[in-house]
Length: 305
Image 1 (cartoon, rainbow, N blue to C red):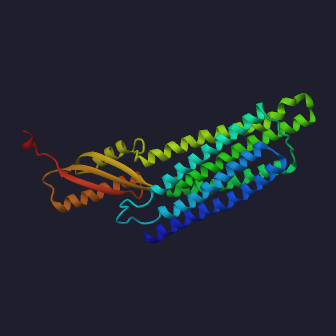
Image 2: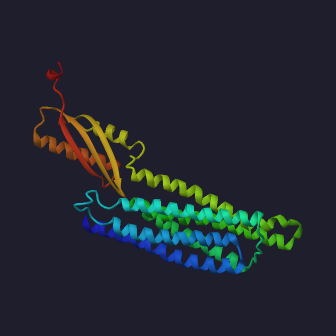
């Protein structure tokens, strides 16, 4: 069991570290090309990747800290560090979007900036899409395997970059067409419009991520799980009733408390065996859940009368 836990933590850290390396390379490449071409779309993507780098560093740190075992001050472990990391990443992305929108509006209505569309501009975006696709798959796989919201948030950033990079490429194509066909001058604004679309995509995804992080921090129960657990436990032979079902997560670790009523004639060893069966039943719904079962004697028919 301990060996499996160590292996899982090492796998999560390796995924998070590879995300950091990828974000460093992409951010540097985009900044250089964005400055040299003057493309707001690429600079917006560079800012996005820069925040992805900060988010990746936060994720790496969060994964390391969340794996620490419970102690006297943190009885449920340190898993919520992952949820805090995901929420902070959301705030960073939203702040960046404000800057992108402001700069795009300035270029559309108040300030003209000449953009030089070169092969490097298309190359950096193509490389970005390739790296983002590879990293998002690795991170999503690790996030699903270990139920890690921090890794899922990081994967979401990289997968969002695929779409936003594609939009920037379309904007660059529009600028290039405007150079070749002066009658299509409106396409000169395609880069700024692409930057606005990037910002809208990031805002939409960030709000979803932020909502999930807040729900996790507020100990919101997974939808439908409480009812499903109650019904499953009540089907266990010997359980008269199941109530007061509570579920909370500490990062990827679920904790479940349930109260059950058992037949009053059951002796202690039988009740103990029954609670172990209830634990196994719950863990079929929530693997690796830390389950606490509170058995209580059901009222006898005579006492009800």
